[in-house]
Amino acid sequence: MKMSNMLLPTIRELPSDAEATSHILMLRAALIRQVSSGVYSFLPLGYRVLRKLEEIVREEMDRAGALEVHMPALIESDLYRQSGRWDIYGDDMFRLKDRSGRDFLLGPTHEELFTDLVRWWLKSYKQLPITLYQIQYKYRDEKRPRYGLIRCKEFLMKDAYSFDATLESLDESYDKMKEAYYRTYERLGLSFLCVDADNGAMGGSGSQEFMVNSPIGEDDIVYCESCRYAANMEKATYGKPAKSAPAEMLPLERIPTPGAHTIAQITEFLSCKPEDVAKTLVYIADGKPVAAMLRGDRDLNEVKFKNHLGCVNLEMAPPEVVEQVTHAAVGFAGPVGLNIPIYADIELEGVNNLVVGGNETDIHLRNCCIGRDCTVVDYSDLRCAVEGDMCPVCGKPLKLERGIEIGHIFKLGKRYTELLDCTYTDEQGKPAIPFMGCYGIGVSRVIAAVIEQNNDDAGIIWPEICAPYKVYLAALGRPGSAEMDAAEKLYNDLTAAGVEVLYDDRNERAGVKFMDADLIGLPWRVTVGRKAKDGIAELKNRRTGEVEELSFDALVERMK
Ligand SMILES: [Zn+2]
Image (tube, rainbow, N blue to C red; front, side):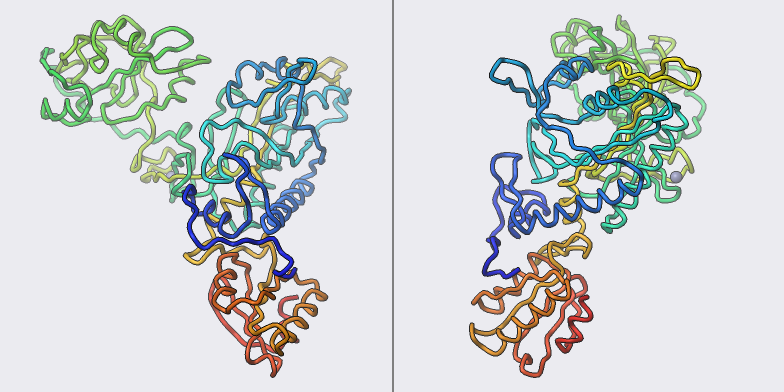
């Protein structure tokens, strides 16, 4: 492709509204253009990358034995009403009406449609297992779209769904997909982690996320360098250190603490350590107030708390509820005399003489001992893991990093097949319901992840496998010069040899061409300059910066 025929308006200055490196570089290299907040057009260069990625994903899905289909993005609401998602999905779902007033949606994911297809087709256990997939646009009405392709309203996704007769068979289908994901990301040269994830509201028996490390990631990953334990924050547990014998119980004291309601203010006021303080947080679980009690310097893990309670909805209690159950201003909740169920974090078990809220404005209690002064329903792991916690597998210190989710695999079980009445006849001739798994890759988001991991100050550094072109051919010299003629011939020879070349035939200075070459970041830059008359061109590796001189023939051979 010749630059003179290309739609490639590269930008020198930094786009003002872009924060993520990948977003900045994709705008500057004219891969994408924002149409509205969270909605992007792919320009010629960007679309070539998207198609290449799509093809890699497709190859690995096909290799794993999955069958490609294509479902609509525009879906009538009835199936989503049957599954319940029309009601529980909330504001993230794009909803619309057709001209006769029927409800439609733009698919956020397609569990319902695949289950419906299989329900229609599936008669006998002999047809199982089967895994189907599509590469299709998905829609989510993000509250705050950001970071370009990382969080947007319309994005290309590969979603696959497996249907199996037994749990063992589901495990096999799941493992095949997992292997396909490893292969896909390894082929792209991504450095990634496969982490245990929470099953969330979808239920099911297991789930893992594929994450790439990135400072702009929106998820916390907890991992161990010694044994490869890795989990996302929602799911991460930690090894419990051996407990020392409990301290002798001291008499409960009531202490005025005017104006002190944060943990920092209390520790300063009472000159104690954060681990001597226990905070009591009031929540509403399925409409009823409950309390979580944990060390002052810890964060409650709401997913763990929710799973422990087994409730559907869990949210922090609004101030008026806190005031009503504690009879005090917000910030003074405590376990003594609190008339709602209290669930304590395991770290508090056997710890005496805690500083706690007094359920009275401007009052705290010192030397609170659970069991003597108050009771709790039970002790369980309710807090978020922190850097330095013990690995639950090998006991070494855990590490924490931010990550971007680029894939998610999930054992759904019978949730959708049951709700949508998908049945078949089993070996005994009885009706049975298949087990389901679902598997997603955010294809457009993976482009952002590749760029996040492959760039320098000058621009993108594409891995060869998904680069929009392989070679950036820069001709130095005015139109009609010997250099231009030689470059034109080299361009034709490379193209004839099947090499993807972006030929910079513009009448621009060398500096401009080299800057664009670095920004666009094709793996190889070929310069045809003064030595063109001797049949010599310069070859530069974008990643290593290595430069060598080659004859035109040798260069064509090498690039092939
Ligand atoms: Zn470990």
